Length: 444
Ligand code: S3P
Image (cartoon, rainbow, N blue to C red; front, side):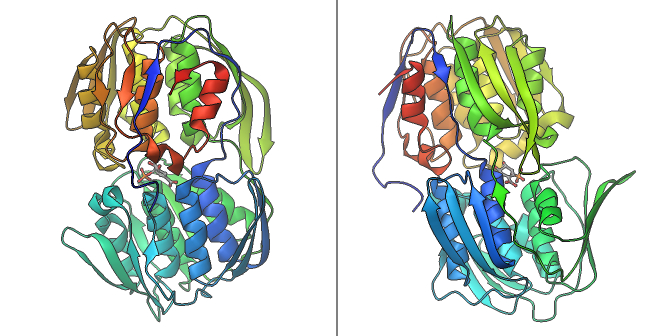
């Protein structure tokens, strides 16, 4: 299970200025990949700054089940002794990935070209999410796959004994699809090619390069063409995980909307494939400084200094969607505090995240007095410089980012905002509550 079975209601109330430093956790995407690539290397990978959220802990457990040794040495400090590309052993039990789409999809890719069989399951949210987008390309490598109706979990994969390399154009902009295909391609002979028409987060490519794989990216008329040479010997690497820009978004937006606030968020990844929210906030007039830009663990990072700001609504173009795909829930909150409409376009993928995030945000924001309209592929928030309402409970639908978004909204709305269940927050940001309270947020 990804979090406690008991729902955990929580309430956020109008707060005084937020002040101080927010040490947000390690990047979730990079943490999953560090464990998986560590398991696919021969020898010891040392990881620091690992996110110890439930999603990543489930991936660590899965890597053990496939035969890697995974050990926690201290806070965020882990070592993985891997078994090499093609070295995964058949797990004895079912692989439970809890709430994590990234975990299950990347691990399915990593085992699909090894001649072993594994069954994957997850919680109620993950069991509703589409897996055909992963199982379809994995079948092209020669894996045999059975799934529940609608290509949902549980999924059983009999890995290909003689995998063939694949050339695959991703049907939707998704780093999870790209990464699953690349990880499967590791144990196929020859070149595996992924073509994506919109760029998505590139942590897999960066980290594979760091671990010694030969992987190139070319920009062509078709889009980004990523070519991986199969059957590399991956070399263990020290991985310093930067802090997660998607988690940083919550204290950043809280500081922007609570009058008088000034919050510093150090060491946040500024990878351009993850930067869309920050680009958008600057366009809205946010006062955010990006100080001490530097490189850590192969990723650009900076210290953010955020002050309460008067904001205006903007239009977010579809081409930016992939670079901020997890940040639309919190953008829809900050949009309520801006003057004028904020239009989010090309966001259909939000419908198949941990929840239908368009429906969840629309319902909760309208109940709390906001003006929101949506289509299948867009959401528009008519901001009026504040959230005059509040007072209504919001349903989080087993979705950590929906829970955190409404709790941030409640810090600056007239009436308190409650969420029915804050327990999913532990999947990505286990210290969210003490961290926000430490800044002066009234959440209990
Ligand atoms: C992720 C990719 C995104 C994102 C998810 C993490 C990753 O999903 O929503 O939280 O680590 O690759 P998609 O690639 O399916 O858009």
